[in-house]
Image (cartoon, rainbow, N blue to C red; front, top):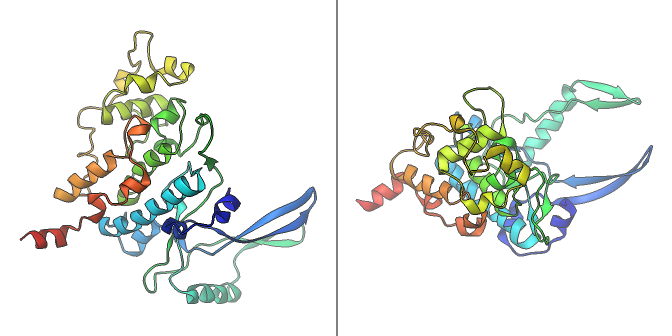
Length: 318
């Protein structure tokens, strides 16, 4: 999949924000040749930027800038490459190095203080490290990474296999109702809470257990969005549907549905005022029951929340 994406020759701006293959090689192994892919070195996941800046999550003003790059990259994947990522999470948004000297200094440090290693077939296998110290000046470009679970979207029938981190699962994925590009959009909406507050909007953990369950996860969706549309349930796999609903169409686990306090406003305490209102509207455009009602990455790019600057907007309105 990475090779397919890297072969796409396009002037789409989003291509800059996808990690592409730089080179490849093969090496012999005991059962045949192994393909090696060469990528540019990248510094660290986006969420670590908050740690460098002394915050738990990313400041909204910082996230807005990076999120626009993510949307451009995702639009390139969807519209030009016809690829569904299926595993969008903060670990898969990587930042490049701000300066080549960071890598040079890291190499010298490793030579001076070699990391721990073990020998396998008389070859040293070194312990990896991703600690490159504090930022020196700015940050490198953001890249969407890891296409190990990606699939093609230009297929004749929707995909139905399980994808996505559990807590980020789209409703059509939970229902095995068939999914396509819009599953990435739901996933991206869920990532907002992870990046801003280092938390999960829906964790799938109900009041009766401390482990994830599909029933609790679906109940949380109902608590947040209201009952699912009948047309979505009609698409569900029959076995999954019967696990969740009675023959009379009643949800079997009403006790797992959170109280009325479980709403976007109460789950978005990290924002205030107009910034919060616009954010909830933005997230709601991604977090829709029906996949076809979610906006595309391209349509989300110029959303008012991404362009809203609280201090500047207030000053300009005076």
